[in-house]
Amino acid sequence: MLAQQLVLGLLIGGLYGLAAAGLSLVFGVMKVLDVAHGELIMLGGYAAFWAVAIFGLDPFGSLALVIPLSLLFGVVLYLVLFSFVVRADEETRVKNSLLIGFGLALAFHALAVRLWTADERSIVTPYGGSVILVGDLAIPVVRLLSLLVAFLLIGGLHLLLARWRWGKAIRATAEDWQAALLTGIDVRRAYLLAFALGTGLAGAAGTLVSVGYSISPSIGLEWTLKALIVVVLAGLGSMLGTFVGGLVLGVAEAASAAAFGGPYREVVGLVIFVVVLIARPRGLFGR
Amino acid sequence: MTERRWALGILLALGALAFLPLSRARDDVLNFVFLILLSITLAQSWNIVAGYAGQVNLGHAAFFGLGALLARVLWIRGTPIVVAMLAGAALATAFALLIGAPAFRLRGAYFAIGTLALGEILRTTVNNVLPEISTLPAATIAGYQLRHRYYLALALAAVSVVAVTVLAGSRAGLGMQAIREDEEAAEASGVGALRLKLTALALSTALAGLAGGLFAYYHISYYPSHPFGPHWTFDALLMTFIGGVGTLQGPVLGAILYVVLKEYLAVRWVDFHLLIFGALFIAIVLLLPGGLVQAAERARGLVGRRGRRPL
Image (tube, rainbow over all chains, first blue to last red; front, side, top):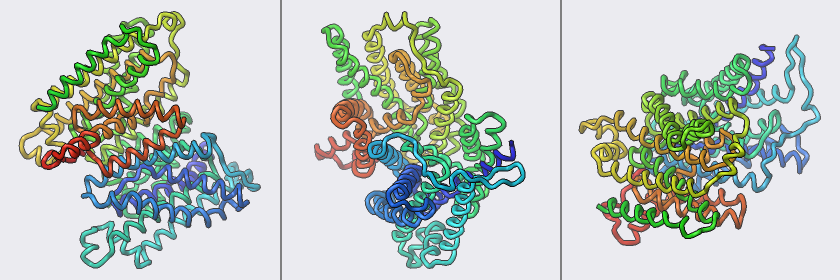
């Protein structure tokens, strides 16, 4: 029973990692803390839901549609809003981004309720109910696939940041934007790319959430907090570290749910968060 | 001392509102003004810690909720409401002081997300422990007097305005503003930053706790976790920013405008008003960080030195 819980925790942990990767990228590069990240995940979830409902796509196939859409949405959001935020000095920037994120979260939530009602939805697939039996453990196929996709996406991002010309520019900007500027990097473009990638990851995470779990307009804050917890656990700078941080959170939640009862799984995650935040403001794995 | 003048004006206006129930005003008018008064207190309480001391507390609802929780329980069991509200405020402040010292190790954004998480911890826990709706006993409902709630709200709004006026002109208040502008520089010039930040938090959460108690006294039934919801924090933020963060009159003007607009929009577009408020809030943060107060100053052509950015 406990082992089963832990396995399920590990599976959702991959999504926590994916949700956090986008936030971590944006925060690390732009020094902008977008607390509407969970709402971006929520919107991505709805995009996938409708892609499946209208075009009859396979839910995992819908990623091919949702990710480009999310990237585009990220570009628009950056140009319309966050390009103004990054003009301020770092302290004002992070405060303003928090406030704007708060406003954005409210607006997206209201918009989603208006457009799609407050009902919970999830994507139903023909293979949704199938499980793989390993001994006594039942592993839901969909969630296993989700974990795999999350891992592939994070691995892809890691390679992108390590090899791609602009990936290096993004990392340089994260390290020290002034130095990056001096070496001729177009910092604004690096910001734009980082934000678009972050939104794209949020869209992908939303898709996976709506396949293996469920979405509703109000899931945003919950996912923002999960992502924040993971970012704080893992620190900034390493996407693979973020993924591991997500797995750790998923397992920790499952273990605590087994120990204290299901309703407290959220609380335990948040308590870990506050404690780590205060004890190690740079994260457990951070530099 | 324009602050004193504003304080006087606001208090006179509140004094005038004391005659409203005597004029046999309809209940919906009293309810509407009550909402404005409660909002003034809530916004002003957030303004103390965020506007004056510069610490963006995104878990403000937790203190509102704690005040509501204890006041409700004590009051239903027969404690006089004022005593129950004071007890609720004491609980909120005690909790604030308990978490304050560790939380203030966090600077800027980390303080904000730390408090956001704390608020959610309390909300989830209360939701787990007390999942049942809290309804007043039938006898209390039968004897429900809107007037009592109204006068209590009036008194509380006046208290919050006086508290901020006194604070703004005091040595402690000036120290808080110095911390807001530059914490290191303030410390270097002899301001005890931690002590003052804790003072600001204590004062802010005491007022929020009292406002929570008023909420508990006013509503006939609600879920105990409802006042812990993040939208209360957002309301306080929005009202303060609309009016002008870090000023005395800002939250008052913001609260009036917010409640009026909200009622108006809610009638016309039902749930669409939140979308409009979200957009309005973003526009204010980006374009007019000083809110209405700054807009008025600009309009008067008095920008110059006073066009500061409080956050």
